[in-house]
Image (cartoon, rainbow, N blue to C red):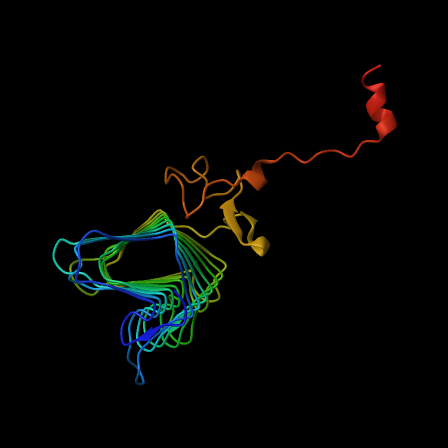
Length: 267
């Protein structure tokens, strides 16, 4: 799904339907909006009238929205169920909120949100009332305001890794429907404040430590066994981030040995 353009949902628009699944696709280089400052969901737009949606294990790359939700824009009313999980959301952009994803009430879990951008706030994730849990949010950029990784005004942000975003890691600002809840997030190494807390945000057990990725230079964002985000070291928070302890990090380094010395071991 490449090089599409529409007012909303440049690559894919879902709705009004029920029980829709988008799995194992590449949604790339699409655009939303025909006039300045308009268009939502450059890659994917989920309509509020859609009752049950699963968006899983897709690559959502290099899309752009003139308004909000460069990669994904989701809106919801009533008791609809939108699940966005295990996607790679990279290099998307928008003008307003949510270069990677702009969410209303979705369950947004186990996603890699990488190097997205916005001209205003929330380069990575902009959340109104969503459940944003167990995501890895790295290297996103916002031109103004903090919370370049995650900007949350309601709902939950739990067990996320937020690293190397600019300016700021995660920003919580209460608006409607009670205070947002921030818990067990590792926000570390962001250019600006790792945590920006405004109003009556419920913030507990959050911390700022190097998550110890296995090999981020090779885009391996699984974590090392000694990571503070690993279940054995997270202080009762279980796994933090989108990826478990990686296979590369479990390997035991081999010692160099000569052939001659090896033969002596078996004499």
